[in-house]
Every structure is written in C-alpha cells, then in structure tokens.
Length: 115
Image (cartoon, rainbow, N blue to C red; front, top):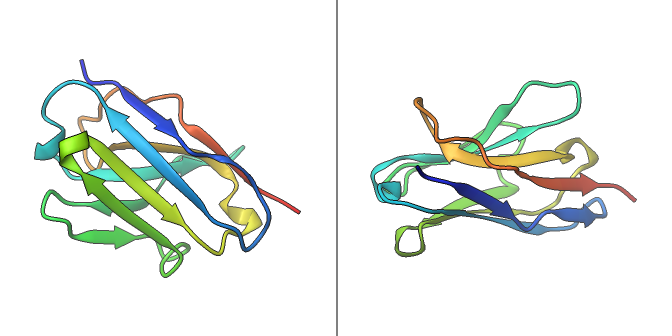
C-alpha cells in the first residue's frame, strides 16, 4: 500500500515562499499523474496543480504564475514551489494522484500565510 508523506509547510509572511515535498513509498509512483491539493477550513479540498508522467503541468487560476509543480521519479517525489504567497493560500496541502482511484491520503502539511 502506497503511503504519502508531505512536508515543508509552515508560517510565512505574505509575499514569501515555501517549497513543499511529497514522498511516496511503494511502487508505481512513476506511472501516474500526480497533483497537489489543498483544503482550507470550512472549504472542500481543491486541486492546485498537477503534473503528468511526461512533465506536463496544469494549475488552478488562483495560483498560476506563482506556484510550480515538479516531480522526481527516481526519488518517488513531487514538489510544489510556492512564491508570492497570499493569505488566501492558507490551507493544509496534500499530494495524491491526479485521478481516482486515489492513494490513501497523507496527513498533509499546514501552510499559513500571515503577517
């Protein structure tokens, strides 16, 4: 069973940057498109960015131009570089497959953007 472990979150001031990492255990990671998702309090989980096995990327309009998703299949990892952070980016961030069936969701990593 694949496990996902997210890290790299924290408290950052508006305009700051963070780099999130997600490491997957088990096999098969390189066969799937992956995504970063986020869930703010009282809101549904939303897809923030995705990356195919070939490296094609897509972004939600709210983060386009500020966030960059990447992957390293040799490390079974996917990353999210977040720049120019805004208070509305505050959420718990998760990685998972881009499409169902999802892996079991990890604990996520909290990102808080506040002055």
